[in-house]
Length: 351
Picture 1 (cartoon, rainbow, N blue to C red):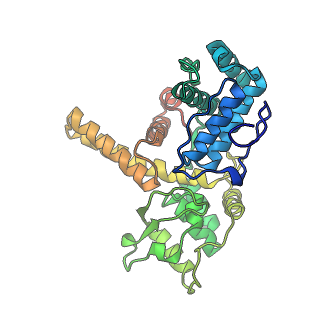
Picture 2: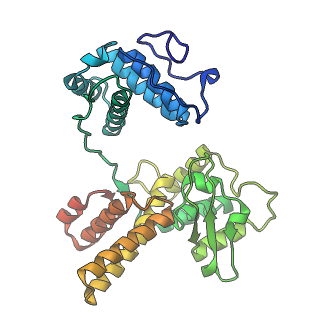
Picture 3: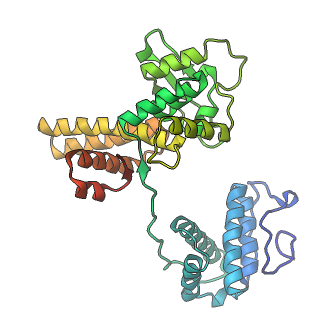
């Protein structure tokens, strides 16, 4: 029997039964492990005891099950770097794993085998030489100003649709954040320019960075129209996730955005992000024209990146600031006819 009370072998269960879950405070001594299957079971037991999220334990178990299926229940001492490199090649060529999936599975192998070293099962990790593939990012797709106006007009036929569209395109909310909005999260001031929306929750119980985003005048009036009737409590919007997607796809079709297969909340949010980044890039260009030093300019750029990321509820270390800057550069290059620069800027599909 293995540490989870389950039969040892190559076919490891993907889910840990609730009756064997250990409290996060439990200290688990590394179980002696000679074979790969034993090490996987002991490592997953450690993750549970350490209080790791169950989806993390499950995905780790899946990744390591794939290794077992490919190379067999090897002795840990015989596990070689060449085998792991061949496993990664197999995942890419035979299983068709994407770059993001490969990166996750390589990270799983590295952390698993570092734990094996710490537990004293092996002297050194054979996974340290694995190289992460370059991550291929989907392009940032944004609407131009004419398309934005067409989408907003298409949504204005229904108060809830109109408010929802504007919270995406004028405030940059995520779909789950919009679905979790309560009436008390909206501050509709006498002066529309003073109105704000506070993001506190997510409909999917995901981590949310609390923030307050100013509302545009049109978003202020759309929300005021929606909330004219007293709400009985609960969310501002009664849509499901699929309902939100349907609304945005429908307004995209009605606005005749034919260059896109479908309009999504993410495209509207990215449109907001690129717009606010473009405003800051223009301010930076103005600062350069007024003789700002290189150090002052670098500080201004860093400040603007943090501002954009905060408005979007993203970590200050997120790479999205750089991607939005690339999108702005592509727009500017396209406007001046410098298509080579626009191509190098990447990250944008824009007409």
